[in-house]
Image (tube, rainbow, N blue to C red; front, top):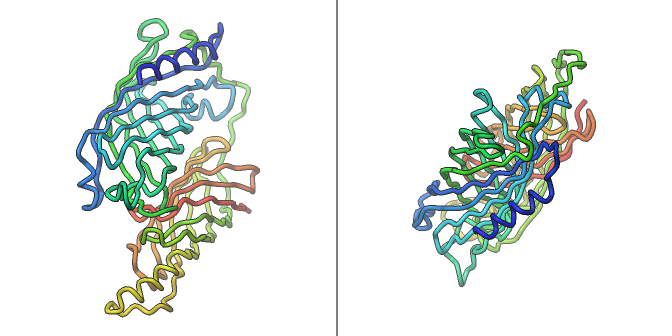
Length: 362
């Protein structure tokens, strides 16, 4: 890993070295613990996860309205290596995009990151049957961090220290998929390619009110997933939603809506369960459809926003899952009316689906 870090640093210096440069790089060492969220996870937790986090960042200058509105955040890409120090789990390699937001005179850094992970040791019926966490080699990776950040402590170099929460899951695209959550201590250094980088906010912009009347949204989310039965097959799902949103200010909008869940893997699972466990009295004709009602919040940054929703199944004939569900993800506005999104739908810590959505706002 030391060679990897040196190559990363040399590449970054050769790519970004200029007289005036808004770019920076960070390197962090990680070590912590796994958070088992079910009883069948404890046999996997036999070591302390360690790793390395490398990021390339662009410091915002104030040239755009959202820079100043969010206290000049950073954005960029990351590479995360994590060794779970557990033979069944192996190691994960992740790449993705991130935002750093700053508070407390820019000494407190809050990080949000989303990417794709590759695992070296997924579940295999013969060779690795203990790994119920990773059913596929490719998964989603979400990281949330909080750190004390001191830039330009010595010339262009600074330091940071804090805690990082990491999550891996394939959204039950393929079973098994218990997923893994870890929390790790984060200790590292950062390097600004221009220690005298100056932010120049645009003072010509006129202040405006961002409040809007209630708007209405139609959204279709789709993808594939598999029932909890391993190798039972992947089937498409269609989640059709309608909701109203009310923008309150520059950053926030509230949501209230309903949605119909057409999840074909649940339909197949009901048929399987009715035959496999006749003593439970489940009919193979039990309706697999579900109807939910939800509330949500949208954090608007620029064309990208972060979305969080929590819902309740008002109609759920087959009660395999708890009646409360949640959804988190990102949304991108192609125009004022058309948006796309990528979200993960879960029941507490148990993921059900990775959703790709397209919507229309009127």
